[in-house]
Length: 353
Image (cartoon, rainbow, N blue to C red; front, side, top):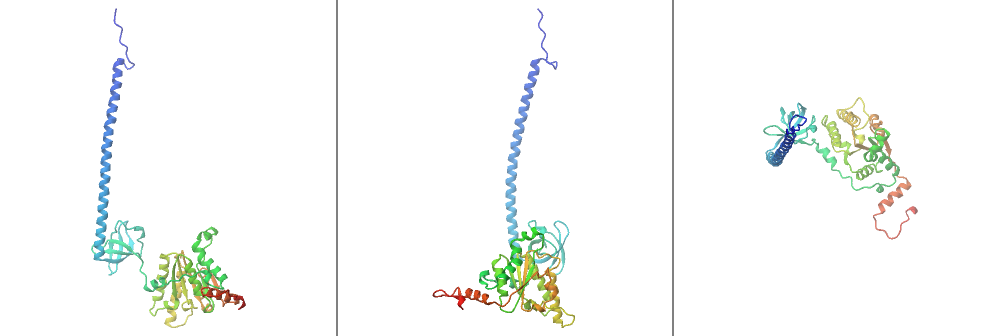
């Protein structure tokens, strides 16, 4: 009998040959997978090694930076002022000795903070900006900050309950809860004027506010600002408000404001004109283009009648609080406050007095 013909696959090849081809294809795919898996493991090990090398290089770089900083701190640096930023890494600076330079900047410095007028430290050799320096502060302004208001609470001020409430609304509330004014859509008050006869507690109230708030406190005696050199008093006012803006929240207390805040007039001596220039600078700082933010000021005087109307208008001194002579009930409250720490035998009926 004749042999039966071989069964062909759809492709025209015998079924056995097609099955062997499929098996070879699977074997090849498996070998490719194993090869790529080995390559992946090799790359992963190389990546780990490179990361370790990068970590070691970063440590060495940081150590070299610290050594360089220590070396430069012993050599000294030049104080300069930023005039303009040219590119991302280049600045025009003016050195303290006069010339101007185009210099670079260290990588660690936040270049967004290097604005026009910023004080910087320059390397003696390369003139590279090494670090940003704080604003230059006049010694008089620095001495204003060292004034300690003391540990004074509102309960230690007798007979001025209504005045304390008004003062807290103007000074304390905008600093503690500014969102209340934002919710209403109004600007918070900037400051207030305390006026009244001498010895009625104006300075004591300001010290109580500064003691109760976690804020910087500048105490200024206005008569001490006036300088015999032209322009020095106005410069001191500018530096005082600039220092307050850099150290927000801050309260500026200006006592005896009538020394520089009197009415302006056309005639007068050179000293009078210097006082008027100081007043104009004060008015500009209180209500100029630069926002005060969390800077509040309290002014005190016993001569409100001599103050310039521009100083008293809303937007500068938003609240005028009178501190009168104590009434009979106020005297009783003051007596109780001062008698509290005294050793007493028995109870005292203060009302009988």
